[in-house]
Amino acid sequence: MPKFSKTSETRLSTCHPDLQAVCRELIKQYDFTVLCGHRGKAEQNAAFDAGNSRLIYPQSKHNAKPSLALDIAPSPIDWGNLYRFREMLHRFDALARLMRERGEIESEFEYGADWESFKDYPHVEIKTKEN
Image (cartoon, rainbow, N blue to C red; front, side):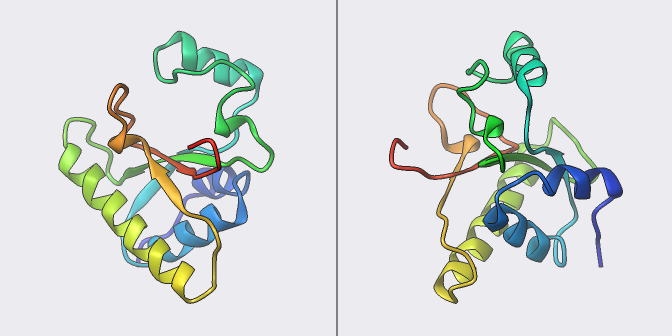
């Protein structure tokens, strides 16, 4: 059974409890890495400058405490294999729906892979009223 590295655990611990709950269940059946949870000002603005985010600090859901967003990637990471990213997100979504039905989480999620103008395959965020 896959398990998180210490680095993934540390990153996940900065996230909203519902993101943590789904990830902790998903890792039991699918191997993936947590790339990012909470981002401070310097990290967020560096992501923006590098073209990895559309938002400057503090506008990203990564900037909330706890973070309302995380970035995950299937292990081992192959940035050229988008099928594996889609598979991971489908599994995440199916598990989240089941956990919501069972009352284990309350949140609904939005996926960067579904965005029209900026495809962000690792990104998962909690839906809020503005999205």
